[in-house]
Picture 1: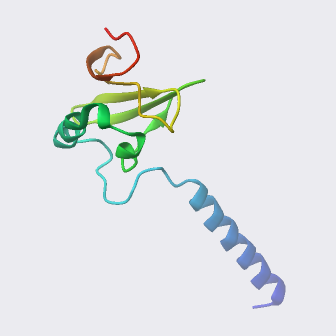
Picture 2 (picture 1 turned 90 degrees about the horizontal axis):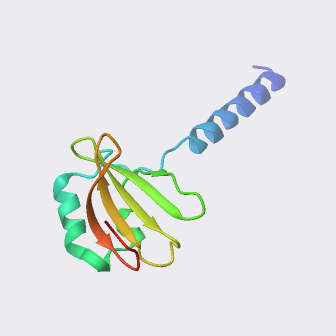
Length: 115
């Protein structure tokens, strides 16, 4: 291989490695892609002691604008919404949302008027 071909190959390989790293999800290896009902029950048992870090191992979609709202898929095609003004403080509201987008159950409500 000539020097120019080696250089092109190296640059291409470096680009592919950088691209694949940038495309990694926030999902930790070994998780199922959603929060199981057993895991959800364990989280709910923590109540007001829940922190944002309790959800670190689960994949989520950030849907907040101006506040933190993270949507986590849970078993049974429902979603868990975790809301708060700061990641430095515990979440202010955690609720379950059904497939239609309707809030079904509020698991935690701190300093908010919940339904």
